[in-house]
View 1: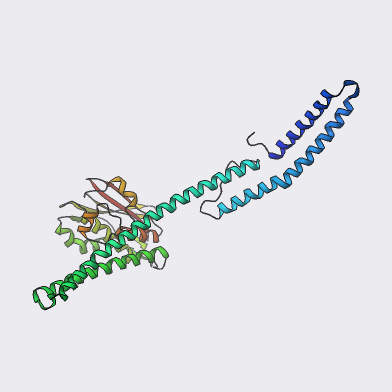
View 2: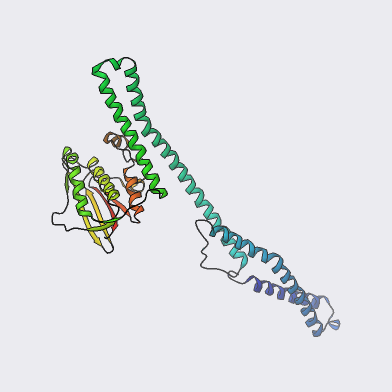
Length: 344
């Protein structure tokens, strides 16, 4: 009897019990000794007794069930998923059953999330170890060569010291990027917004990146007739975002390809798109693209250089502005990164 009040159900049972009591006495008592007044009296006594039993059950059992329901509700309310039972029933036991099932689902989801985080933690530690191990081993090799006699050889010493310096610079870059991400996540790195022309900033970045793009024959373009577009954001951090995305498009763009920067007015925000016609990204990689150290093609990515933290930094900077970044890609056709900024 789903949805029926537990009190009503117990009263109904008490009435049935009283009727059965009267019927039983009637069947086993000779007719000459049984009257309707006796039947009414027996029914009344039976009903009163059942009612007392119901009250006892209510106060000593159902009240405990109510408290248990509230305890489970409060426990879930203090977690990530508070109770939202739209079809709240008047049946205490049904409510308790629902809350326990919901609580079990929460724990299952929590365990799955913890498992994913554990896998991510192991991958992250493995990636950090790998990224730092390469330059450390390089530095160690150069130093050992110099100590074994190379220091006195002019054709070796300066060359190996310069190589060691490059490995040190790579380690510093990785550490700086990790520190930047950590500060963005914890809010230690404050965003300093100002009003500026995002088109002018994009043109400045294109000029700075033009030589790097020319080496691969890639053309960086921006609409020639574009008017100034003012946004309210941290100029320095947004420059980081645009640089990272353009560098990414150059690394994985097709030789003699093209990277376009476009701007769209979407109400209170401006959407900035950086699109290339490069190799593209497989669909299964897109959900993890902004993870730290995540690489679509690890061997190719490390050949191209970089720390593997660029896109993660980009995502954190945009989220620190309370905005969003998205990616669309088709293998062999190219990739489009788009992010929004508040209008200035």
